[in-house]
Length: 452
Ligand code: ASP
Image (cartoon, rainbow, N blue to C red):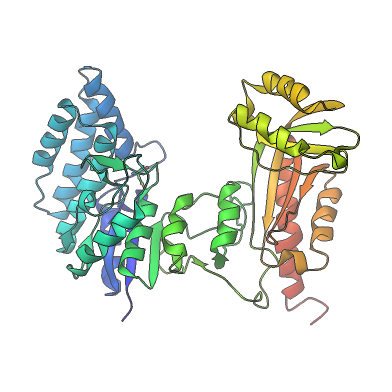
């Protein structure tokens, strides 16, 4: 028998009908013994997440505004779930207590965490399982940083004492006992921590999409699903804009090499995407790349200085200037006499002029040029660096679409090739790269292709 930790996102638990689907999924496999729920999410695109309503309630009560709307909406949503599922959880009593706590000065984190807390209680009630309050099981240090040592010394014992349990996602407690939440979407992290703590064989993350697509489906409709991806590839893609899982949710399971399976509550037959520690050679018939992701709005600062390559400490001075303005950069391609720094527009906005002045004073370059409106696109895949012709294929595709490449960065990570293009060419470029690899590969492997 194996052990599975199962996390369900907000849309999977948005109302009673969704929760019944979740129950069916959990009960379909007795290995699913620990469940981590989010708060009820959106039932339709116009709807509001319970977590957002709770933040609103907190603001209202703290500003002394008498607007019962948020509180009413929260009560209605939880009452509806309780009544439709025939549960006994004292929703109104719990909510009275929550409102009273906020009035007594409880924090915004406390307020926000109550969506997971109440949903967890309802789910435990429905399944007839134990309920573990995450306040006594997941810990943060004094600075509000997740405390893995403390959590791993306490949580495994708590889990061991329960055959089956529901542990709400998103929050834990500080050393003084007060509630602290992860950043938004943080129930994914709780699921990963629980998987680590009980030594799970698998961490299932159920959401409203069937895993990761090879490209953003808004840009490439019908983009192919990624069957299997490594943690590292996923980090690269997530960093570049592909968002399904919270980006920190990989760390707790990473060391223990527990695979994560992203699945769709509304399409449980679909096997979703499996995220694994490492993979060997690409299986035959798989596309040569794993996925494509990108982001718009970057600025490139190009410093030129004759003899830069012989000047000791030049780059260090450049980086010192960035540090002075508390700026992190994305890429730094260079040539003998130039170095380019790529920075997200939102970071550099407001301090660009001062930064340029500082670079002139500290680095004494011959020239500094600034150009904005650049989009970055990452093409990610295993062993890319060893595959002959991959970059040729990518650049040919862009050239055929008459897209100008402003920057190239392959680094040494072996799994990532980044190109910079004009913001306006972004969508076209993603589609061109996707077609060059995925559509072309499909033709190559089609039974009608001439090679077969
Ligand atoms: N409910 C929280 C949020 O909306 C956490 C989560 O869903 O993971 O961010």
